[in-house]
Image 1 (cartoon, one colour):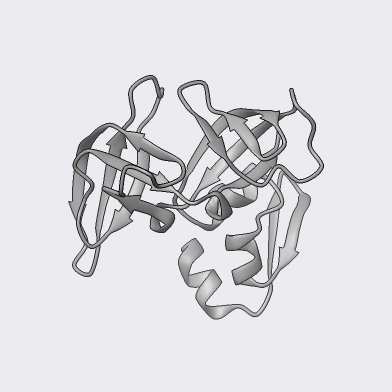
Image 2 (cartoon, rainbow, N blue to C red):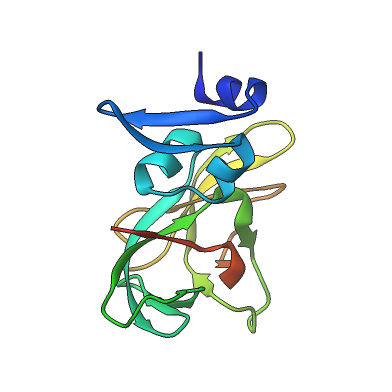
Length: 151
């Protein structure tokens, strides 16, 4: 059974890795609030980027500094920034928070949406995005849509 089918059919899902329970929760909680990188990778496509907390509600991805809820994490704390493709905004206004300039990579037409890679200068891997039309020059991720996972 594929992961998406398990999420669609279940009231609760247990995610195990090497015989260890990583998280037991509803499909929605697993997707929106994964307890770890392994859980995030299990329940859906996303960009998971190594980062470091640099200040209260600020993270450094190495190629950009973004606003994100850092919770009680202190500066210097290593984290992973989880960005789900449906939370990436295509070609936002200049003043939009967490706006990243770059270029369109591979596009995959899926009918109701377009899934695409967006290349940001300095990033090791492209950011996966999904929307009605692909971004041409910039993307943005609202601070409330960046989920931090501890390393």
